[in-house]
Length: 116
Image (cartoon, rainbow, N blue to C red; front, side, top):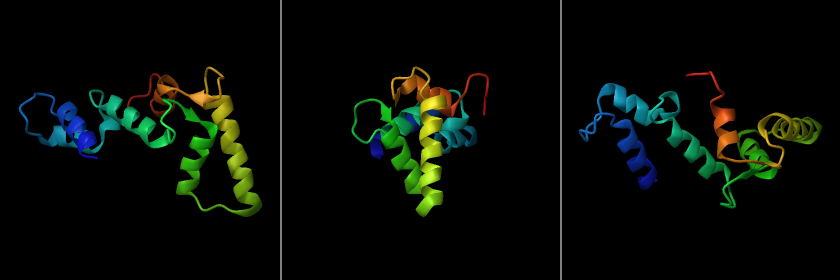
């Protein structure tokens, strides 16, 4: 966590003065919303989702992360999981290898032409 915060601080500190202005603090808190810190949000997402640390996200890792945020059980939960697996394979896994790599993760989190 300390290394993550340090890297975010260095990237957010756009002028390199080792202090964060109001705008730089916003980039530190929400790196996904700023062009110069967005790469950190994507790296952190990969670290969080890639449970086996192989540098890519499997459909199982993807679903495990989604399940951590939801409490769906029974038939409704099973249907939801199957829908998310299809979404992963049909829309998120652009190259069709069964995994999300860093480029596919970037496209998912920040599609081309969409600027926060």
